[in-house]
Image 1 (tube, rainbow, N blue to C red):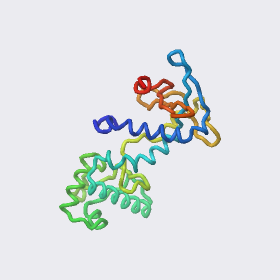
Image 2 (image 1 turned 30 degrees about the vertical axis):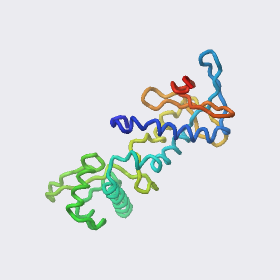
Image 3 (image 1 turned 135 degrees about the horizontal axis):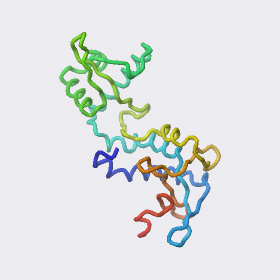
Image 4 (image 1 turned 180 degrees about the vertical axis):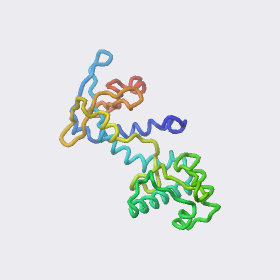
Length: 221
């Protein structure tokens, strides 16, 4: 997300994680060449599989440092995710149709009402849950808007783009393959969709490039 200074500042960490995964798999990728400054530059392309793996790891390695929720509020969110998943599975409901009350949450978590109000209000303010008014029962009910990723163990980096959405966006376009079993690589995305990230492949110390051109840091190196 680019709405917060902290995530804009630490975005380079996320990109570095993606590059690291690509470089780990560099021997499974074809090395491509582009001319830059009159000289050929070798590079490899990041694939959607690399981004998908980076997203899985980002929750663990970046989730805690970039988490906008205090630990106690995060624990409540994870508990809500488990409670909603269990009830939806039992009742055959879609998550978007499920509503719950504070009483249900108290019974599930054994939290006190005052403590629950504080952290539930914080989740509502940050739009992790939505508050609805049940006019018939004359009470407020809640809807869980955010589903904590499976296996995140309480550490979540929110706002990562869904790789499945990227794959759907690129379906039907000309695709390359970067080695047996690797995911498809489409042409360069439009502005704001996350341009393809290239990494130069050298025998010594591979250096990251973006769109086949060395970054400002690498040009000055």
